[in-house]
Image 1: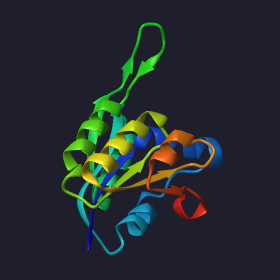
Image 2: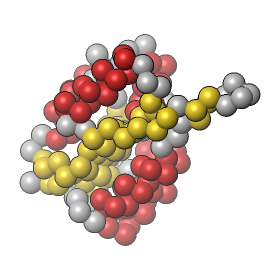
Image 3: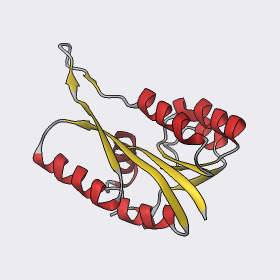
Length: 157
C-alpha cells in the first residue's frame, strides 16, 4: 500500500471553489478518493482561526474526517488588510514528511508551492498530487506536480 501525507491550504481551497463554483469543497469525498487503498501517514488542514462557532464546527468536521487541524490567528491590520498565511508552515511539514511517504498530496492552487514540489520529487523521489480548481491553480504548480487532479462536481457539496 502506498503511504501518503496530505496537506490542505484551507483558505485557498475555500476561496477558489467559492469563486469558480459558488459551492463548498467536499472534504469527505476528497478523503475517500485520495486515501483509497492507501495508508495515511499524516493529514494536515491549515486554517485561520477567527474564533466563531461556525468555523469551529467546520474544524471539528475536518478532525472527524481524519485531519489534524493547524490554526493561526486571524490578524486584522490597522490599515484594514488581513494576514493569515500558512505557506511556511505547509512547506516545513511537507519537507518533514517527504522522506516518510510515497505520495504527497497538496490541496492548493498557490504557485508559491511549485519549488517545494520540485524539491520533494527530486530529493526524495516522491510522487506529488495537486488538487486544485482549474483556471485558478497556477500553471507552474500544475507543471511541478506529478499528477494534477481538478476539483470538479464530484468534490463539491
